[in-house]
Image (cartoon, rainbow, N blue to C red; front, side, top):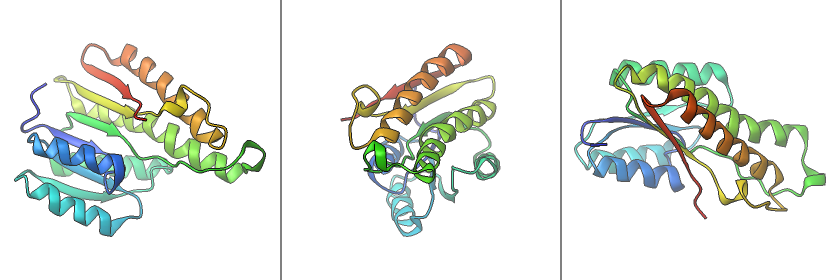
Length: 184
């Protein structure tokens, strides 16, 4: 896929892996929708760095644990970019807690952000991709393949992302390519 001039939304793009992906896509010529939840200052720094590549970029604050926030995010991206070519589902929680210590609130927060948000973001992105199609990349984790004792909910959410990726790839092919990457 030629990246120059494509429109990409990267969730969790204010820092860490999401920021690195957003910067690389911008360097390749993509216009970038920078999603963040609460890291506004980091998102503004990312925006400044991306604009250094002479591409179009905007920041969007949204708590992706809320389905209404996901809907609003995609409406705003559609307003500002018109269409979407690439979605990178990078936003995630990685909370260290042993299995007996995990509360319902811990469980819900992690599953809502790490698994439910990519599910509904994928649905929304496909609608913005139109007939031309596009690409979706889900950031998984080695924890989805090998159990991490002190990160049980994170591990469970990431194996869910692996299956979501496979199912979405089957559903949306050949118009939309859906893949997962599991760093470290």
